[in-house]
Image (cartoon, rainbow, N blue to C red):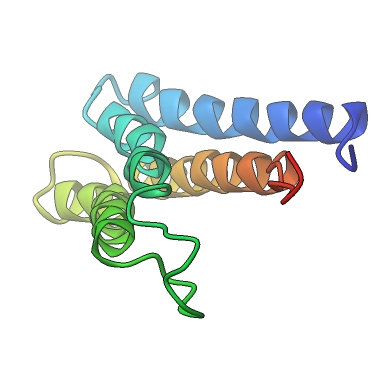
Amino acid sequence: MAAGLKTVILLSFVLAVGFLLIILSCALWANWLPLLVALTFVLAPLPNALFAHCGQDEFGGSYEGGGGPVDLGRFITSIFVVTGFALPIVLTHSEVIYPAACAMSIIGGGLVYGTILAYSAAFKQEDSEFD
């Protein structure tokens, strides 16, 4: 196990800072619409996780992509990620939220999504061919 206790502590600290920035972007200006960014970034990795094992065949050849279902999962994940970054910008452009709330929301959302990606990369279990 390459990832240890220090990794868990660091990732939990970064995740807490990300959620703190998102909640502060809502609470400081009494407008709770930037909280939707947290929802989109939390839901973003789910399509990849759901479609990761679909369509994989041991005898399918050397193509590592996994086929159509895996690509669909990546596409839906990219929609969530782009929405998470674009939603505060659109809300700021339409003058629903303040620019400072937009910046805090984008930075916090990036930290949340980056933490989720780092956690899944650090604790990914490789399948042994002898299991």
